[in-house]
Length: 286
Image 1 (spheres, rainbow, N blue to C red):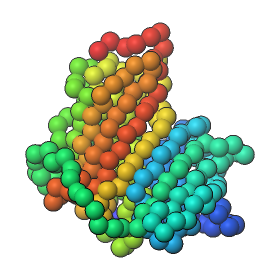
Image 2: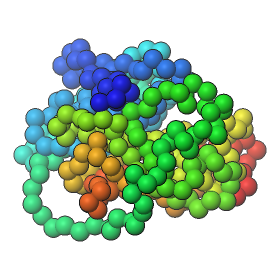
Image 3: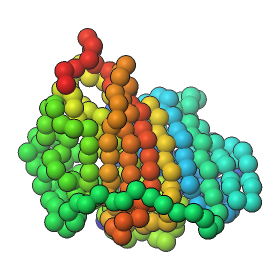
Image 4: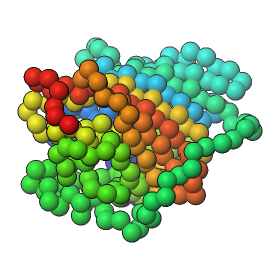
């Protein structure tokens, strides 16, 4: 396990401080706000720590306020329902006495049933693609400390990075991802790592057709809500194809969909995210 992945696993090892209440810490990094994927992953871990049977099969979450990276986050779990097949939890993430994130999640005991799925796109193998560090080399000065920082998720982009263009690209993005090391055999941990990684690229897919970027002074972007469905067992430390598209943007809000495929072609996770895409003075040119 790489040092960066070990740090992420430690972030997900929440401290129980009371029945149904957990405390999560933030990484020692210079951030303006807490990364949304971290809050989603820690919330899912908090919920899972209160469940005896089943693995996560869905989550529906809202980002309510920016997280403060300088203080811990409290996660309060509401045990809404414990059934024979399904278990439901609600999690509220709290800082400074206010909710910053709200999530409902459900766990399901595996059982046989009907099966079908979309086919996995035909794409190059991850080993044939450049590492993220190679892609980001031209942006070393712009990215600053972030460039040199180790990252827990290995990413191999298929085609140019979103930040290597300004406008006119189709709202489609594909990349291979995997945890940078070997994880323990814990399905909850693998689901949490996937939740963490899922928030790393979806928003960029919404921005692809537009003449805006994260460093524009007149642009404000933020995740509004995030939904995931875990279909089949998978390992987050094996390569997963992350296939994304953005079918719509309107009224300062964009929508993106994502699908994670295991290397054998199994569709293992689906997700949808809506994001705030606010541009001062109106819409940017496409």
